[in-house]
Image (cartoon, rainbow, N blue to C red; front, side, top):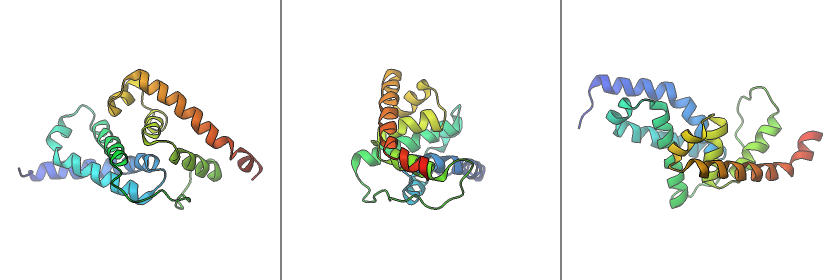
Length: 170
């Protein structure tokens, strides 16, 4: 089934406008692996293009494609298709306000969490989604999202606690 020129241009505009946001989310989901994040965004956008008719009718196209992104990531992790491994050092990038060492420590700790817990934290706290939105995007119940948020945050605090001394004395 071919796409009209207008639909192609509409998709290209969508991809251009949402690509950076999707990449930021993918970077957090992949534990800072730039190449894996780019591949994840590319796959999510390819899936969105393949079903563009459904995506364009969605009430919130960004949320629809972000759900595709998260579910694709979880599926890849579950199936262990990828032979790539997270790297120990986050690639150099422009850093906004804040402590770069803390940011690196946070990304490394986030990468050590299980994929589903990482997805819950990214959607809830990085993407600022409600419990209900997160539950819908991940196909979970709201109570499960609350429980995973609580346990994942506790585990993240544990992981960061070991870095606390080096972060505060730097």
